[in-house]
Amino acid sequence: MLSEVLSRSARIRQIILEEEGYLLAKVDVRGGVCYAEASAVDAGGQATAWPSVQGLMKPVADRRVDSGHRLLFFRDIMGRALIEDLSREGIPARRAVDIVISVAGILRNLHLKGIVLGYIGPESVYAAHDGSISITAGLRGVPSSHFAAPEAVGSRPLDPRSDIFALGTFLTRILSGADNHESIIRAWNDMDPDLRSVVEKMVAEDVEDRYSNIAEMLSALKALPLAVPPPVAAEPRGFEEIRAEVEGEGRDKGRRKGLLPIITIAGLAMLAAAYILFAPGPRGGRGDAPPEEIQPPTDTLPAVQVDTLPADTPAVPSASPLETVVWISNCTGTGGAAASFREGPARDYPYAYTSTGTRRATSVLLLRRADIGSPLSDQPAWPLAESLTAADTSIVILPVDVTILLGTDLSYPGVNRSVLSDPVSPVDTIYVDVVNQGLQYTLDGAGPATWTRGLLDGRCVELGGIEYLISVVDTRDGDRSPNEETGLPALLNTTTFLYRTDSGLLPEFESSVRRLLQAVSDEVAGPPDSVLVPDFWVLLGRS
Image (cartoon, rainbow, N blue to C red):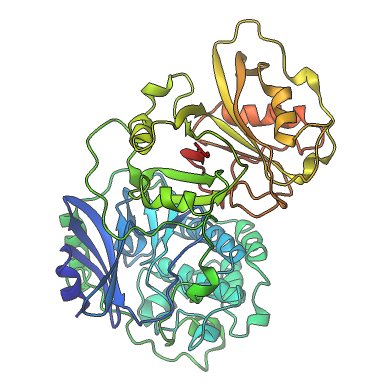
């Protein structure tokens, strides 16, 4: 049994779901709580490298054990797998639709990277206590159930509309609160007619009858006039409370033994779509894309897969490596430097990504500040930055608040210079780095990033009625064709801003810069949903 395989590597606290070929459990490892998945190594074509997509939770450890099984460990995200909190009453419609909208956003960004899942279930969706939703880059694959898209059965899912089907079945399941026939039918009959119409289209057996893409489906879901549910409880319930509740519902003492047999519903026209919600399909990898199709070349932007669980981090008022996003740019001109740094000093950081950028002589670590009013040494991430640079004392640590990625929309260098002013009495400084991520030509005879630096550096901006000095700490003009400074899509069509979204001032700063640059849209967009904003950006130079 997979539980026996897992118990040799970690102490099992709770088995959440156990089916043939798949196990999800909560475990204790090195004094901490993790979610763990177990599966046979040959269970399907699981992806071995996942793209950088916000909301995709990657494992902190990936182990292959002698018995021919694979174990993945996911950090405790201060939340819970959705399957743990389902009750017989199900989730209220408004909240359920909001969860599906969040999951759909993640899947849409995976589609842009060429990955289709074919199945999504409450066991692979996690809800944090702040309301944010994530899904696991795990071993779940396409299970043998009616909840998987029919065309995904027996083959690698390739059509993004397979995920529209999967979202329809997922929505019905969390509305019903259980996977048995009676609960599904009750949820179907109680469903708002407008919502039922949307779900019917999502789970159409013929892919041509579904929504053509996730964007179209999202428009339909967001237009639904559903009641607002009560607030989500902010505090997590204890394990004993959850276990008692689950046992009281007759779920075999907290262990879900897979999907209950679903009675065929053929013959009832009003339940035709509900019937499509239930039948078997083989296991496969999430997205089931062959590893050779998604393995990135050296020094592009893959996610690191840590082979062992990181050692305990000292109790300091700083971010944990497990929470810290690191971008590493090889600016040395020698291949493999970024990958070597990732496997060396950054080995304990699961969110570490590599790329190739503008060549430079010296190395810099840009530390994104959590508090723009405090010096570098008082930032929560300062101890981690020091540990990353300990192996190379030539790396200079610099503060950064906003990263500006210049896109091809900046082809016209018109400027509204009145947006910024000369310094009078600034109360603090906004630190900025500027990167050319699209332009193939100069602006007024200067590199695009250098040109932008000339507009910003040493000028002042008014934020919240207070004057702030702008300091540009680094620029990368790009010396590749096409420019691929960050490992994001090779050419950005629109100028993009990266910053911590929990700061109230920085969206206002983005607005000011957008008004300064006449060619750029003045609509504040914030960091793209598909990008994990780097807390550290390491720029490796030749020295």
